[in-house]
Length: 259
Image (cartoon, rainbow, N blue to C red; front, side, top):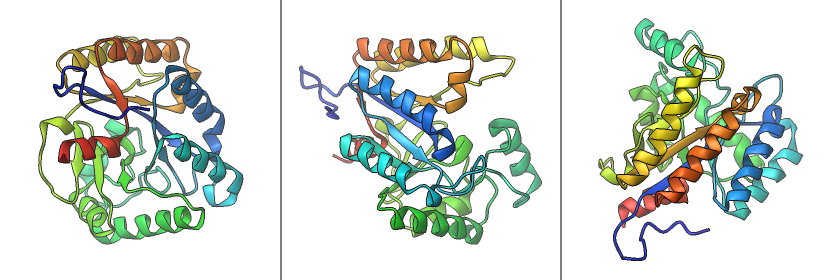
């Protein structure tokens, strides 16, 4: 899988990251479906792993699924931590909690945490991943929302990067880079704007590729339970590839921007 950002003419070309969200034992079938689609397209994916209790299951109780994730990483995919339990609690200020509910439907686990609270959850998550032999240096907060305290906790915990709605942040250098900027395109299954969102996803992916920016397409398990969303997503990815985007992972985007 070619993660290079150089095209045949030597100019810097557009990159595309396809991320599979909510990767956990409870969504093993949906993740396998998205991974099979990625394999058919010949592209890597960034797998956003929830290690804690979620939808009645925990990764620590399913060593067999950890082996699946290790195989995907060996295959060329990237493992990214995606919170601890993917659920927002009563922590933090009222405004941040309200924003998290509106944007992430109650999943914005790290949106309002202080540094100590975020550190506790990161430590719990890392302990599970370490025991299972799963390695990651990246973090995508549920709902792409992380408080300033959570970002400090990530840096202190040794994470290399995190992501938000608008791009990828290098936690080591803290430098802003156009090469890391790109809006996260995803569906909102079941919402009133579901069909409009699909059209925006297809058009946005092709537009970002044509302007030689970072294309980000986020896949969720619940997308597969809504008629037509999978086909719309695959058309968006194929459109970006035809427009010249090269599929890679979040970690490789950081590497490319730093080089």
